[in-house]
Amino acid sequence: MKNFLIICLLALSSQVFSQNETAFFSAFKAADATAMESYLEDNIDFCLFEDQQIMNKKAALTKLKAFLATNKILSVEVIHKGASKDRTSQYKVAKMTTSKDTFRVFVYASGEIGAKTIKEIRIDKF
Image (tube, rainbow, N blue to C red; front, side, top):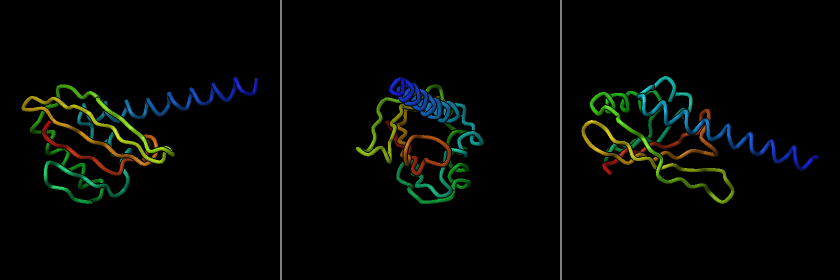
């Protein structure tokens, strides 16, 4: 019985983390900066093409919103993901198709994607 409860708790926590990841990428696809804000650490490494800066999340969201205002998102699909051996960090790579072009989005988080875990966002041409 004890093992059954442990398995149930692990399955539930896995679903919660997947929901956070899905919620973040849904907010990203909808260009919903307010929803994305809760996932970002206070200071993040934000890279848009060759312009890489460490900035506070408000400044990063302002740059991201400006980019998304000129590139209407049609789809976002996570195509690759990985985690460190000890699960203290993870990354996701997504393919973002916009009305103008296709981009690669890299998201790095401390632990699972959740509240205040995203440390880095990079957007490059695909």
